Image 1 (cartoon, rainbow, N blue to C red):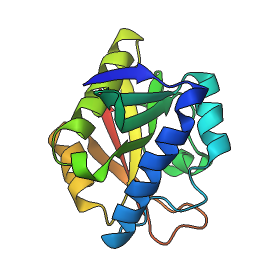
Image 2 (cartoon, rainbow, N blue to C red):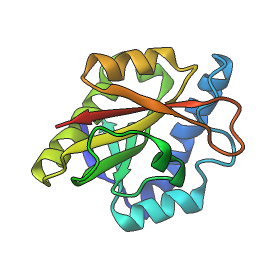
Image 3 (cartoon, helix red, strand yellow):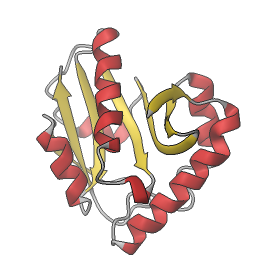
Length: 166
């Protein structure tokens, strides 16, 4: 398995992966994403900013992660541990359903953590749908702490915010 920066040529395969993840989430009553998020143009912007990465095995995309320094306005309400130093925000991690629970998501998070350390970030922030108990359990098991909850416009449920100080 290798992780590489996505290009515009990868967007359709990322959309394919995300569609399968959305269907899997919906089948399990998790409303992390929907048909309008993420869309092609968001993914294209992420590629242009250098924020979108893929994990491939035998040439096939099995996972993706997006991270950068930008955070949604609703994050301003949260009492983050790191209030003053540079932080990285993970916007999305997706693993093709047949590859879930095989360590792919953990490897993607570890990739972001190495990137953060190498680039002098002091913490990593992310959010996850409250109903996604297995993901919350994963993040807590690798050192992410619950810092609050937010509600995105047009979402059915709150999202838990987590942070890991590096």
